[in-house]
Image (cartoon, rainbow, N blue to C red; front, side, top):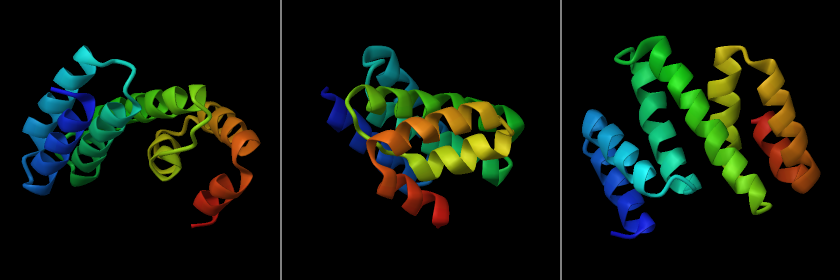
Length: 121
């Protein structure tokens, strides 16, 4: 199965509210394609939902923070700025200001307006 097919299957599981299955699906996909920012972002969405829903608590939030940072880091290698809203929400809630500042400074250098738009929303 290709990365994009894995991603969309995971999205479908999320749409159906099958969060734990989606988490396993994305985790398995990442083990096969560790450099896919899309799969890391998909897992981030699942973990974010579990964190705000209360089902995953602070563990899910910390795990989501690791995944969104990974997704952003992979994107930056290709000069792609994505997932800034998730980054701001998740890493901001963990209180990791150093990581947040570092990544936003790096994204700002690549695409100032997209970073600014995210911050002002």
